[in-house]
Figure (cartoon, rainbow, N blue to C red):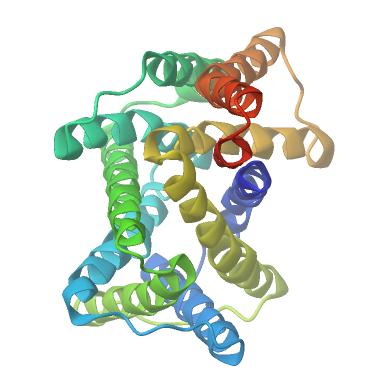
Length: 307
């Protein structure tokens, strides 16, 4: 089941960058983010309520739900949307891939948890692969003031995302259901973004075009309701350091789609990049497979399933 959720998240979030491009237009980024998470939170609350799975959040845990909303459903996306105005979306996705490094660093900083050598090695291999894939974009981008600001915002957004991983892992360790926390967190995130935007005088327009509405629906339901629930479940099961390797795979999915939909030509360097990303994934998860084999050999199927 963990492998399925991992693959599902990679497939969904690997395509959301395309949908985000359709939202960069007449509508302010803050408004698009608020619409996305207000819709996603409402859908999730209704679905959980109708199935009897919506749970109350104890008072002592509510500050951490709010913190998760700040990191995963508001501040990070505000940074990404604003960054995409200054630098190509490919650069933003490359920077986002650095979440693997941020998760390792944050786990060491806040939890004093030393990263496994294989995780570090796999992350480095994967990031080298991403650099090969986007070499032309990286080299062709002039480093002026706007570009530097965009890169800084993308890095800040990635740090928020990484910190949100740790907060979610904390919430799950205390028995808070992933879907319930996401539902309340998304509504809080939408309210936070809307409040800050209103105080800054940001206009809340709406684009009724099929492209914008379709992108909004895709980002809200598959991208947020399904994607965040699947991803944070994987974070709980295998840890934030290993789960963050998904961020290296997202640009690979986007480029694969581009090969068929936009005629993207795979150069020898890009092919090497693809191979390195896949090799990094294999390195990161080799210990999981080994533990599963050992567990089955010792007659502990539950441990094999956990792997």
